Length: 487
Image 1: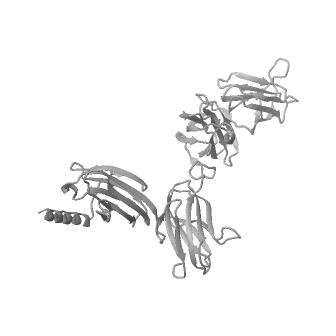
Image 2 (image 1 turned 45 degrees about the horizontal axis):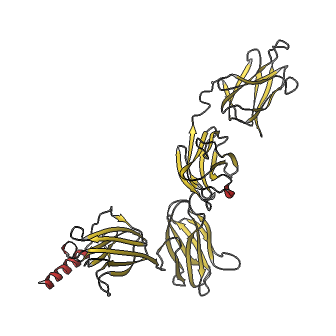
Image 3 (image 1 turned 120 degrees about the horizontal axis):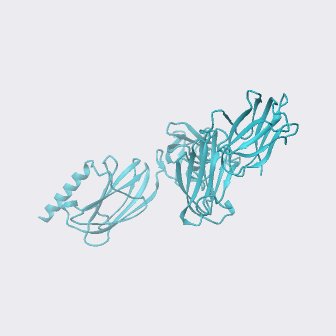
């Protein structure tokens, strides 16, 4: 009777495993390298896990019972439910030890069960050890970073394809080194649409080996490496793919991390990575604020740098944030359309000693010119305008946005007539902050190197002198120039 039950269980198990199976999609995901522990009994006759695999990868599985009388079984199914591996007992006794070569890229279901599943009688704890042993060298295999494969180029097979998955901002080095024969290696990398993004023939004059160095991935997705030859050379090769130390969006100015208005991004600074890079698109007149707030852990002394497209610094800040050692660049008026960069770093940068987490935020403030009177002409630093004062037009009004501490110079120079130029600088409430009559010489007006007391809107009133000791009826054309001076 016992023998009959055993045969029935074998028949049931073999029939069940011969058919594709539907398994839940929300099982526990596990890594390819590591140890999983569990317990099987009448209430839980099997455990199901998922693992991501790539075509050509070789994974070693070791399953053993660690207590009780458990008789464990191992089954592995691909994403379609097709059986990829089934093992009961190894030659050494209860347990399984076997390698599996992934035939497809995708999710695999790892089923650890007791013999007979729900009809079984054994129970106990188990350990499942998984080890990634490498990848097949044959064409079509999928590579991970730090993989190496051996291949051969000949007249019958003059190119070998490998695939890999990359993230935006990854920075890679791909080597193809001859190991035998006359092979002159040649490397190409193409994207998923077969557009060539990099190629190399000879790494240097001293070697025919091929290397694609510092390849920056611009879009997340699959890529193909084409290992081939130059001319009719032939032989074997070793191909490897590695991620550089600077790899990753934001870790180098070669691959800044995009950030948009209203977004925040978290990051970490350390002694080996003391700065992070971000980029954003801005339009002339955008009023922006950038904040860098350090995290609860660490002792980071935040430091912010706003830079132009060529990474030339525009504004810098150390401790202007709300909390001590937080950095803040506030109310910066963008001077021109284009791409700008943010460098989130620490005080003293490479020579600094602090480290820790931070949160970077980029915000756009309400257009500062939105409440400017309609008769005011908007200006920015470095611009000049012309106007005319007469009996019908006794003054002109101009508006510009300034920041606390900026040094400005405003000149009003007569072009014709007998105009006695007169300048007034007003604050946002159009109250006079400073004024000038003849500092420009020859009845020209000049407000020179004036330090703005606050951040906000300012107005310039260009008019004629109307004092009691002069002619209040002068008139003529003028040129007005607004400039920022170095401190």
